[in-house]
View 1 (spheres, rainbow, N blue to C red):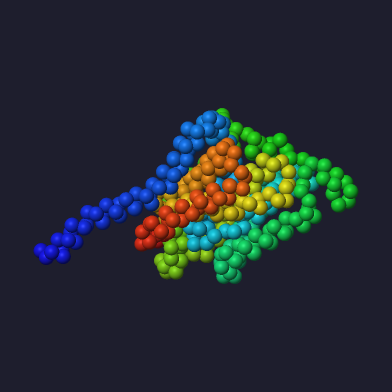
View 2: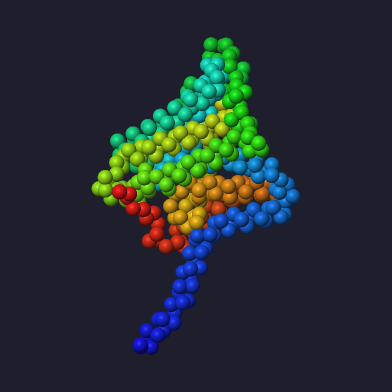
Length: 351
């Protein structure tokens, strides 16, 4: 064996150790960061140790997390839904109009909101699949369209009990007690929004990771042309992804509407950036390097922990965006700088 070969062999253990360390950071770094901050706040803030604090944090995180799950599904097929915030805001207005202006029950409002979310998702799918408009441009146009359309029937006013209508009469309805229970209700100590969040996370994870349809979606996101040649109906799967995203955003809007108890026309305005952030953060969990439901859920929880902890430590409110930006930056470094590029978004089309 030559000296060069011996030198190369001697360097192998060191190189292998370096690669293993990097992969360890990529795979578990995000979880380690989450655990670190949880332990830090738990040890330094007595109020943070209360179970009610954690349950409250999960409750208020649920809206962003559910919208983020919808964004995650569109990312799986290689797209990105920028209309989730406007759909959630529209859902608040539709729910309020149904109950306050038209005097209907909360169950009717729920159905109306879910149908509206699915229809907007279908409209996005029409723009993207049929008209061949790029995902970002199509959903951006939908975002502005929905933001404007939701203001027309209420003439730019927030909808609440006692609203004076155009003809001078008073709106006959109000938010029903049953509808308000969407946010207030609990099973034991766990609130309904947390339960909805958990159920949708597990359902999305199962659908994407354990079903043929989910694996096909990943294949489409990796290489749509190869998926098409393998027999996948790319257009239908993309349409399904955007309709699911619309419904998830509508569910987030239902929880938000129940929380504020009126049709606030500004509701959902900040939801888009937060939902996209948690979906992107989720790509770095366990070194997945691809959109996934469990990663999105954990990303939302980490941001919730950081915002709760920094608020309890009396950080100024304007630090919240800095915290979100730092979390997203760390996640992107883990996903795109330290990870092995060859392992990103590699999925086979199931037969």
